[in-house]
Length: 424
Image (cartoon, rainbow, N blue to C red; front, side):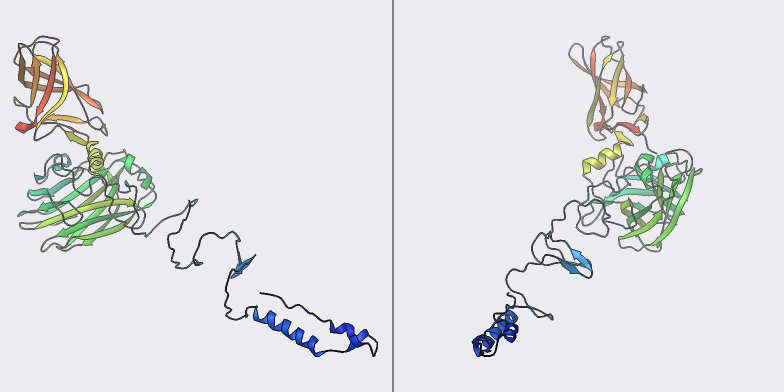
């Protein structure tokens, strides 16, 4: 590309005297000027719809009144701010921003405040009968962290097989005279405090058979004392919001936005209820999620071991199917054994400890006295209980020697176990 350069200055000829040969305008001079003009025109772009070839250098470029930086990086096409298509961009590290409505994003986990929402952990049992009118404590019978309650008649709660990417779900089977059934989870203050004053989204996979079509959800918070929600008969909660989902026999994901008040810093409770789940009817629940924000995102799948540890903060037991050596100790007297049981996970609060039975054989004491000895404990007591461990004292009939060491096992192989519960 070149600019027009004048070869002959015709204006200077006007000042020359007549007869001066340089005053004459020659055809060759005119031809040279036209050639210069033709070269300049041919190598310039048109104002309208120009076409460029080769390398173009633009020191300052303005688009729609905005000057674009000269420090342009990358290759390919320029994109504008409305619906651009980016191909393998290197976006760097933004100072701040909100990412919403994105698919294919790998989250770091723990966005879901519900624990065991996928219903995979069932430390107590995979199936249990829920007694009508029983307590919340009794309702913690199957899948971890969820309590089940009912009125009118007993129902059965069971961990069942899921479908597709969902391994398990919780299913309630109704019976004649059942008037209502509920499934709930209480979220402790430490896991829900930051939700106060924000919008949260509740979502769940739901299905119900035959005549029932409505599932009611209710969100509440502990009214006065952190992590204290009361009983079914005398709840100590303040309702945040409630709503309904119209459900069919096909498992479908439902969601609702919840405006969490600023006062809800004491723990949150989520409860799903249905009406008369009578004989032959089933209610299926899975992928329960409560997350911060106004959009229901994909379910937060956490590693099994991680989810188990989260559940064990509230409940754990020795092995219920095999002999479980839970601790060591010593003979304080010839028949009294002092031992300890340290939890796999520190509990939310000092737990309640129970043995599955008071009969002989829950715990076996192994010790050395004239050869290896096994003696079934005739009594078990718990003392010095903390959020991390407990002393377990046993009495055995076979006399040993004070000071002998002992190894203790819970007899899960006989259906016996020890349990520690700090459920809300």
